[in-house]
Amino acid sequence: MIKDFKKFILRGNTIDLAVAVVIGAAFGAIVTALVKDLITPLVGAIGGQPDFSASYFTINDSKFMYGDFINAVIAFLIVAAVVFFLIVQPVNKLIARGSRNKQPDDPTTKKCPECLSVVPIKATRCAFCTSKLS
Picture 1 (spheres, rainbow, N blue to C red):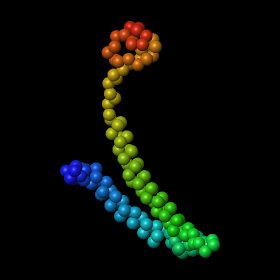
Picture 2 (cartoon, one colour):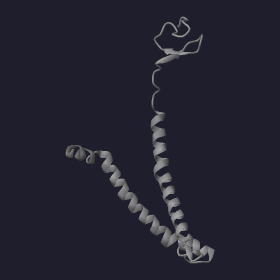
Picture 3 (cartoon, rainbow, N blue to C red):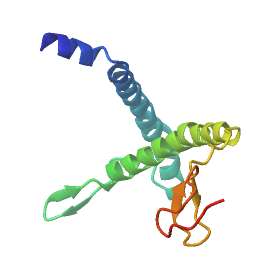
Picture 4 (cartoon, rainbow, N blue to C red):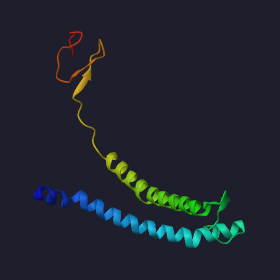
């Protein structure tokens, strides 16, 4: 059991995932600071309130902190935009570029001209209608 656990831990995918989680957490902290320290005051200044992260309304002595929610939404949108524009788009372009130069595979099947069923390329008769194939 210890050998299997060691094998699991030392697999490349596990280590890559651990690094991604640590980097993601650090990046999340940077984005949160950006939103809290720069974007929130900028949006608040436009709206006339310098800091809306502490904004709330009260119903029956319960505080609803909508300012924190707005910060979280802005942080999420920034992270999503960065991931989309800096990771997803370049990877999609790279994959498209790699598949452009790829040669098409040789066909392994063909269609019967009589019944339009798919038969192996080396077949001399159709397995479905028994017509002769060229």
